Amino acid sequence: MVMKFDKNIVPADTQKTLGKVNFLKELDARTLFVDGDNTGEIADRRAEFTSEVQASSFVVVFPPEVDLTSLSFFDEVKLQDVEFKAWSMIDEKSYSNYADSDVKVSAKGYSIDKKMLDTSAVIEKNSMTDKKPK
Image 1 (cartoon, rainbow, N blue to C red):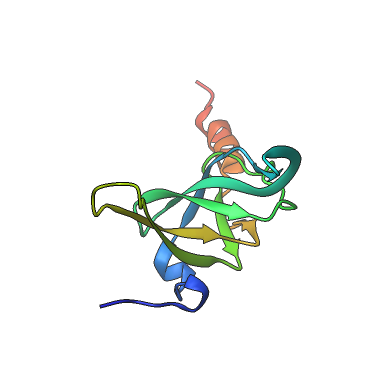
Image 2: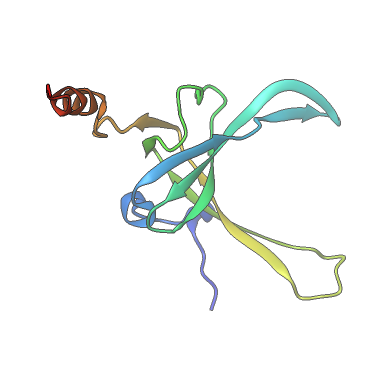
């Protein structure tokens, strides 16, 4: 049985597929090469995230204009305009039937989930109420 997808894009519900997504770290940006020479121009930006549903980490590829510097470790994010693209590769020079495959995740942007509880006020209040005169 062969599964074929239009432009290799796997249709998926992002929320059901990934669940809660947390930022882990920004990875090195990929730069463009022309005739084997690095132009220094950024082709795309990459970051590693965790997925509650997948119970693993995964890499998301963003356009070069996306700024990832505002993200902090374990920020909960909502990925925007997500695509899941299937790919596979067979080494024709190999003498085995091994094939490598995966799903490449790309997004046009992200937003930081503002629903996270700001505990600083709660901690400050609790520390003041805990200090009772003797």
